[in-house]
Amino acid sequence: MESIGISYDNHGWNSSGGRVTWDLLGSICVERRPVITQDLHEIELRFKKYMEEAGVENSHYSDHELRHIEDL
Image (cartoon, rainbow, N blue to C red):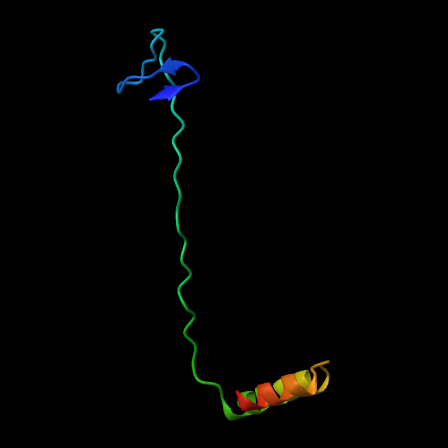
């Protein structure tokens, strides 16, 4: 491997006899497991529907966006 005119061997020594330092990098992937909850009670479902309707009524969606939301 060549780098700025100095050659390196496979044992971590450069051509001038000095020890080569290495930078080790690593990574980790953290995954969040899904939260499993109980089904909503009837009053919770009504409140959820109410909040969704209030959110749409108070929004600044265009007519096209409102029709798209209804289609979903």
